[in-house]
Image (tube, rainbow, N blue to C red):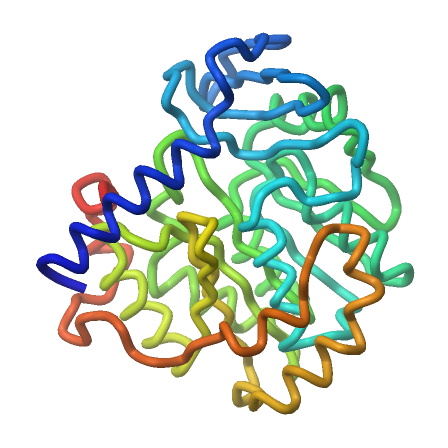
Amino acid sequence: MTGRPRRLAGILVCLLTATFVLAVDARVIHKERSLYQTILVEKLGSTVCLKFSARRNQRNQSCIDQHRPREMVFAYTRMMMASLLLNPSPERILVVGLGGGTLPTALVQVYGDAVVDAVEIDPAVVAVAERFFGFVSGERLRVHVGDARAFVKRAVGNGESYDLVMLDAFNSDYIPEHLMTQEFLLETRSLLTENGALAANTFASSRLYDHESATYADVFGPFFNLRLPESSNRVILAARPPLPGLLQLQRRAAELDERLRPYGVDIRSYPKRLLSKIDWDTAARVLTDQYSPANLLREP
């Protein structure tokens, strides 16, 4: 992605990002400085949003409409549910990054017998999710406060496995660099069951795009990209088994449609949007623990 296409994509990101920023008349209902970041909760009408910075142009991390609490406000959270097309019957699920708790909450509601482990490094985020976003942990939705890299390494050592892994760990800038490397993804892949799937929330356009893509391809082989016109995010979908074909994806979407409709997820529209075409520079260097200059490459 070079030259004019990259510039146009960058403009699109800026325009779309603006739609996720609360209007200037939004009311700050909570602000605190945690060990890791500034946490803001803002309210506009019935919508409550979480962001991890005091900058006015900072992206919202999570939002909830108090009148329709199940409905997923952001396109990217709905897009993450496309991972169910790769494994429609997960029993053990790992979610990295809590935010307001939208994804783990929806998953335990959709799958009544599933157990979800949610990993969040910042205990203040957990408290905010519980206080302002209706997040409730329990026997089937277990919260682990700590670094996701350490959690995954420990889980591998303990022989744990997951049918579905969702990577949604963002700080105020982007994904922490140690959660983007080949070594981390290899450890995460080893947690997947034989039918396991993984979804990763990333940006649709950035200077990291080629490197991220090359890294996921190195670890997982072919993967799906999912983009929607209304979102500046892309979701990477990878799996342990070979990727399913269009007919299988459409069949699974039809089976999931009724369960996901209360969350605003148009799952039937996703199969034709899942693209495995290589759209990155294949010569881009793979991100590793020794080479992960995310601080230089994350800007669009």
